[in-house]
Length: 221
Image (tube, rainbow, N blue to C red; front, top):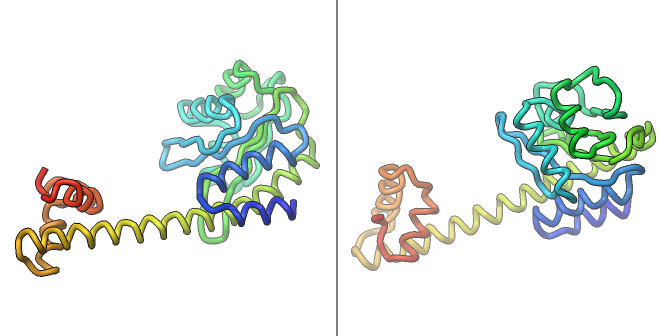
């Protein structure tokens, strides 16, 4: 687990960090056959770094039904932070619509863990086994430890990715302003006003307007 934590923080991109988290779940948690990360934005589900199609299918099912352990784990208004369905062949006492449909996907048991730091909620790390009864209390402890390490790495990688995007956007806008200043003989403030006005008029993100200027030489569509 300590080696895994070092490996996570050594990853250079958000995508590679998420893939390493999912792979580590399969490698380190007893009984785990597949894993992935579910992110909830409102009621919209995104499936990140799934190790198998099974994970994506389960995430989509939870999203369409608006229920399931990982769907609940990713909701910031829930007090629970760990969810487990030990046996999909048993009568469900929770998620009655999800359990039988997920059983049809070939899932025997599963767990979901909130990925979070003190500052932010990030989503859920989910783990699947094709056999019932494979996740024990030891599996849950290992999963929780992995999720705790993964949340820190996820948050760090997300911050780095956002910073890199901000730097790239700033560079793109600066380049577009330079093009407009040279073409229209306007000041820096006037060039920025052209970009901002076009962004507001067309309901287009400022960076997308700037990219169009860099590609075509004009802010007009």
